[in-house]
Structures are given as structure tokens and as C-alpha cells.
Length: 124
Image (cartoon, rainbow, N blue to C red; front, side):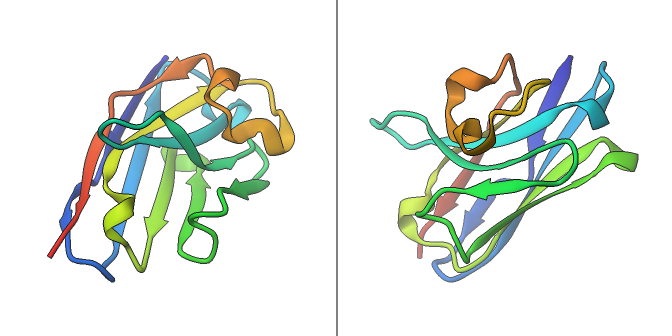
């Protein structure tokens, strides 16, 4: 199982980025995917998650600004991030697991497989 997050970069406050999580080595459409982030000096936190059939949950801090989606044909999950704020600055990770835990999908303990992160910096 391999997960590769990409799409991070430097963006001004109010700007947008789209992160991608490309998966390989497993039956992608059978897995649930979560996006997490870790800011310097802070614990990792759940951002958004999506089940294998498209059900989603978002953290309160990103509701209305971030949108998670998946394209099973491309083995990829996306995180569209709009109206970015400096407090969104973090390393973003994607994770995968076969079991769907509903609203608990924002907890990192629920995921077995993790990819390397991609850095998002929101600054003027």
C-alpha cells in the first residue's frame, strides 16, 4: 500500500490549493481515506475524510472552506482548500483504511496506512 500526497505550496490568505492523494498497491475503491494535518508544535488533527462510497465528514475548522472528493478511476482523493487562513499552515497527510468508522474517521488512530506529507504554507 502506497499513498502519495502532493499539491502543497505557498499561498496567500484567502487563496486556494488542491491537494491530491494518489494511491497504489491496493484496491482503492474498497478503502476509506482521511486527510490530516500537523502544524509546528501541535498535534496531528483530522481535516476531512471520505468513505469508499463517498460519505464525507469535515472538521469544524474547515467546514464550508474545504471539500474532499475521490476519483476511484484515478485512484486519487482530492482536498480542495478555499479561503485559506494562516492557521491552515501545516504538513498535510493522507491515510487509508478498509474500515469505515463514521464520524470517528477524523481520528488518526483509525487508519492503518499513511503517506508522506505535503507542506501547505498560508502567508502574505
